[in-house]
Length: 460
Image 1 (cartoon, one colour):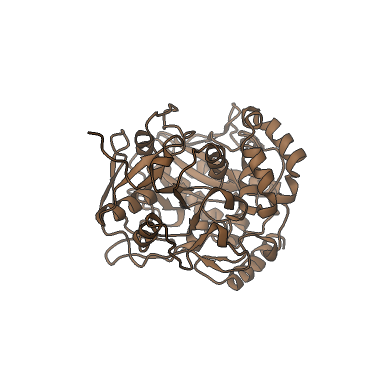
Image 2 (image 1 turned 90 degrees about the horizontal axis):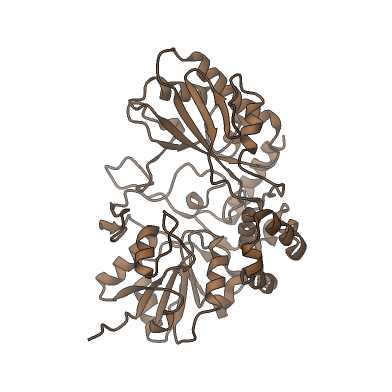
């Protein structure tokens, strides 16, 4: 006897692949590879309240009554729309949420309800009423046909960490236990959507390790006896880092690199995440970073294995609900190896390959892969800044097989011609943003004042 389909299902994008690049035919198997923690928290909450939750793909959505869609980044709207227009008809309610859900204005035709922030406190009521054909309402969600661009919407906040241990990864090799030890971040870096939309919650006895999946420490609190393998600097110069809220001076960076090489118990490499293309960024900013490597290498004693530094550069994306939401996006072609070429000019021991920009006695450094193309950056910016009048443009681009099969440079040419992409990359005023009335943890007035201070310092 066949088991009946669950009333609620988590949607798994058909286009998503596993970590090894292979596609999965069954949505549950694909979901196991994704480690969608937020979706698993909701699944666990619903299951403990007697609601059976399964997984579904594009071909089977009409077997369920409620479809939960996780948008983990704004760029995923494009994939969702490509699949959503081909869904079979059915009497189902589509609820979107996730860490990347901010702007919904141009995407209203593709869902029924949008939820911002942590939903575990009301997900049972929302889903229960949706199953019965009713509508649950609060300030943290919006029904698509009731959306009002002048209304105020808020990110839902959690008052405590999730109290239960979850096993994520299912039957995949990524299977692991997950325990939420803290929420939010006190640093409030100007570019960070997470820290401006989540109130900090740190239970008594916890040190405040916010990321429990990938152990990432802050550069100014590194424990050199047990250092993280991943950390971030998020700016190439001291001027930029201090302005955007990352208190890492050149002296601190130089000393940190030297100590990681001479004192850390492991021999190998550390990964530094970095953000580039801030407004007002200059060549001299890159000279500063290169000189930090020069000084760190010169201060180290000989006779120890060199420490490798992987610098992962990501261009600035102006996230909503942050002080940099209105920032201009640099619409110049950007490719992996470009930052390495800039740094190599000022290195005392330049590397010999395209991505290898420093090759000292005790330090070596490379620019790592995964750099997004200009087309990818602009597609994400369009998703963040488009309005209702851009809905048809977005549908046309999302559903164009020719566009998505084209090389990235060709995609950029198409975006410039068809979408006038530069209009989304310019400096915005707050009232022009479709997310101007979407609030995180501070009032909009506070964000505007903070933005004024930041831009005044950047262009001083």
